[in-house]
Length: 284
Image 1 (tube, rainbow, N blue to C red):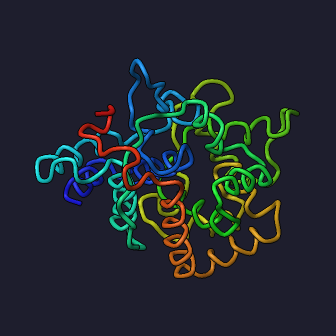
Image 2 (cartoon, rainbow, N blue to C red):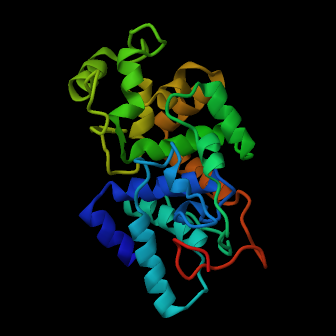
């Protein structure tokens, strides 16, 4: 936690980066720290996938935590458990909620670049496809909406939402579900050509505080990503959940914590499977 506190105080968006890191790890091969592995003669790193390249940060924080743990208790705490604990710690340091993280995961000796390209939801998906990708991980609609609430902290690059501003349906028209003033503001930040790396907060009302502002903005047509706004516009059940979380922060926190534990239990390696890496970037 001391490493997290220092990292987040230096750069507040680190909290969102570490939370996202667990999502992108668990949706590929399960929660096994495969996302941390670098390229080698036997590993094609998941860091190079379309979903991760230029989008995922926070590796250095995980490596620093691992180095300190190796000094204190060599080869006891897995990189996979560190990823899960860092995600929880980042949420706690951003406000709340808190939850108990089940521990005992071991680290994979493999990675899957292809699964990283295919299993992690891109920001322009329809709700039907989002639900299908979450169902593949045994996560339901409540999990989808609650976990999407992680977008209450952090930022996104223009390349992730530019389609909504200029060519939502391939007809050179904007997404009609965007609130007009928000749309004009985003256009002033994100040009039609170039500027792909310009960033915008996912929840501009409180970008570093973990709260339910994200859902309140969606209700106003101010969800930044297509995958945010479709939670309200394409399905009655997810619409009801967005409304409930917008009205009741405590309910959101409760469901989010439960869904994080559920996601953290996706196909963990335990017992004699996998290993506890000495260095999170490479197999032993």
